[in-house]
Image 1 (cartoon, rainbow, N blue to C red):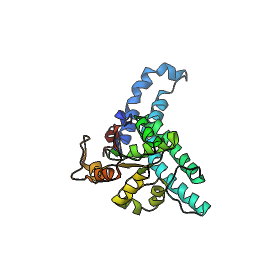
Image 2: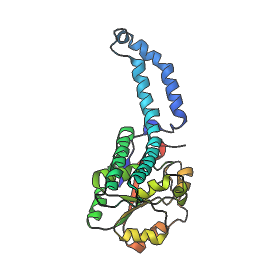
Image 3: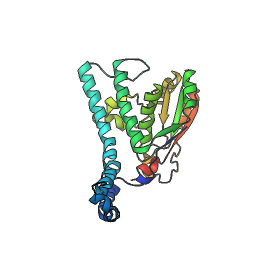
Length: 257
C-alpha cells in the first residue's frame, strides 16, 4: 500500500521558504506587471494580486491550517467531553454521537489533505479484504520528519471506509497537555506488546513506524533507521497477522527540517 503527497514544490519549505517565496514573488512580479500591463490597465487582470494570493494560500495559509486543525481537534474533543459529561473511549465501529463527531474532524483533515497535497491512497483494497474477513493486520511505515501521512490515512480511512486505524505512538505524546484526549479518541496506542497483540487478535489495524522519532530526525533520503527494533515483527508473529508495508511518496520533502 502506498500514499502519495504531491509536494515536490514544497521541498524544504518550512519554515524559511514561506518567507523567501513571498519576498521573491514581490520582487519579480514586476516582470508579470510589465508583461500584462495592458490587461492591468484595462482592469482585466491584476497579476500581482493573483500571484501573491496564490503563494499566500499555498505557502502560508494551508501549512498553518495543519497546526490549527490539530489544536481545533483537541479543543473540539474537550468541548464534546464537557458537554456530554462522559469520558471519551477508543472509537469503535458503531453509530454513536462520538463516532459521528470524530468523522467530522476526519472529514476536515481529508479536505486539507486533498487541497494541500492532492493526497491519494493506492492499494487499500488489500486492507479492506482482510477487514471483511475480520482479520487484524499491522501497517508498517517510514517515519517522515512529520508523520503527516498517518494523520491523512487515518482520516481518509474513517471517511471513505469507516475503518479506524490504531496508531502506535511514543509514550511522551500522551503527556503533552491536551493531546491525550485526541489520541484516545482516535485509538492511539503506546504498548506494551501484550496490548498490541490483543488489539490485533480482535481484528483491528495497528499502524507503526519502527524507526520512530529517531528516523524522523536523522533520515534524510528515506533510509530506514530501525537498528535492532524488531518488536513489531514479534508482535505480528505472535498475533498471527500479516504485515502490510506503507510508503508515502514525498513525505520527507514535504517537511524536511
